[in-house]
Image (cartoon, rainbow, N blue to C red; front, side, top):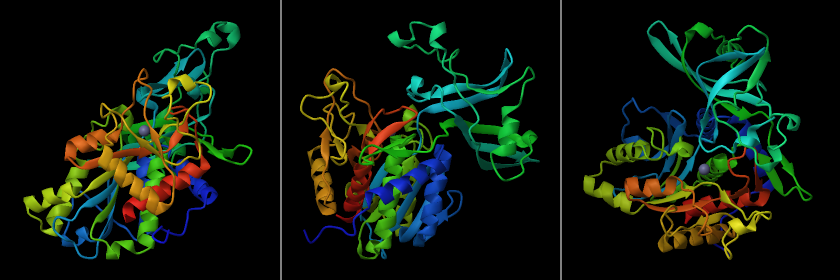
Length: 441
Ligand SMILES: [Zn+2]
């Protein structure tokens, strides 16, 4: 197969890189910053949405951050009116617990943090884990506001009730979202200030807690990811949904520009990592918001395109929407389709749903088949058991919002939305390669 891309991705080197990426990305804000840092090292320059963009942004390597989302692109050396985009879509956020206003609570000698549930967390999986607190603070000095990213060390824990106090726990654990999940982070009868603690320990910068006027703080498992299994075949890690796709897209983009492919390309290759997928994407940095369209319209202006040429460019574009999916679970095979049962190490999933909860159609399936063929990687189809409701993702939202042809794919996991999910080491290398194949084919 002479037209295959080379060199291959080493699965274990790739997993070590993913491990560090997950550690560096406890929240969506950190994930966007991690991607930005890596892209800067690869020669991408940051653009700001509030500044004017000249014609040069249509060519070369750039990125723009909007809160916890980032869009990066590598344009061809000459911008052609009507040329398409190859967009890898992903999301930076994961289910978690988000800190409420007036968060410092003292109950019977325990210091606790008031939280809301963010997204569809598997609540039981968050029990008895040492959690760090991370996110962004908005600081005020006079009339000036600025943001700073913060991350503490292991700080808190949601302690499970002893079985002696609830003999029915093994018959089906029920957790009340208001009464049973506030993390414990200290002992004492006086209220300790959790925000003060974050200000003091969450960043190297000296922050005065009184300057904090707002915050987006979420808990994350402090335990680093770990490879396990007889053949070191698996990775256990938090936030694989969907840092798996963000990382694979980032690596594919790095590899694409390292090969110099953009110089010879006519299309623009793009990575769009949105925030807020886990809560429905309907925000200014989510896939249902205008972020991608805003960037595309501005790139169109940079190209000097007419509206007609812009519409042609959208018609010529493809979005590969990558989000984590499900491997067949050996203890619950009845929850899966009878025939389509993705296995660990079998390659990325091509997600299909008759009711368009996934946006893949036959043409999209063909495009993904060509990308995987170019990369020399296998892939496997995912479709739900008809009696099990199907999840959805940013794919159908992007297709509906922009009219761009969209294909839903992603790596297969076990334990999706658990605080600690699992993935096959080989599948992560395959996903990176498949995205690279998509960029190059
Ligand atoms: Zn997801």
